[in-house]
Image 1 (cartoon, each protein chain N blue to C red):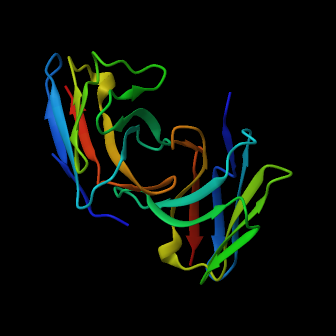
Image 2: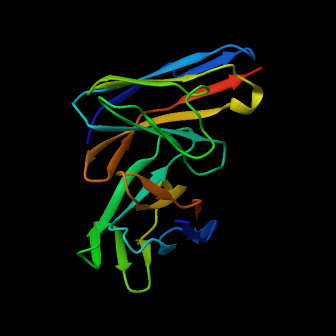
Length: 111
Length: 113
């Protein structure tokens, strides 16, 4: 069935370094790929997304890249800051306007 | 985006009872979704609520246990019926603002004793 695999499950980086989280999807019909950030006790927040007609999208310190041939997409965070500590979820679109979710990555920023 | 509210924010309920969770959005939206999220876990879709039609449930979720109403384009309710401790979770509603783009409510933390 359709699924999204997300790696790593936990990522610890030094403040100021870059962080990369990767996701692989199975449904070749998927054409929308969002990333959400969820802080402890808060709702998931959409931080960046990409559609299948582009290969990369940037918004300040965050960027997402998409490789449709390989069916994978990645979140890149540069110059990490303590407030980047959170759980990040990737997702891929499926029919009926639904999203298939990755398992999440806990990002820890070490001071 | 959209401003989405949920009521209640949290509740402690006894087993065998039911709880209705409300989701309100500040603009008209076609698609609303109900999710469950266990601590430390990902999001699990319960059902899709499209105004004017019956909700569509995902595998493992049934209407008798999780009845959903969608009376208009800004409001939906999810009822958790005949609750057991296994229903303890965070329940989130989301709305689709643009093609596939979803925004979430603040969630309802449910504890069943």
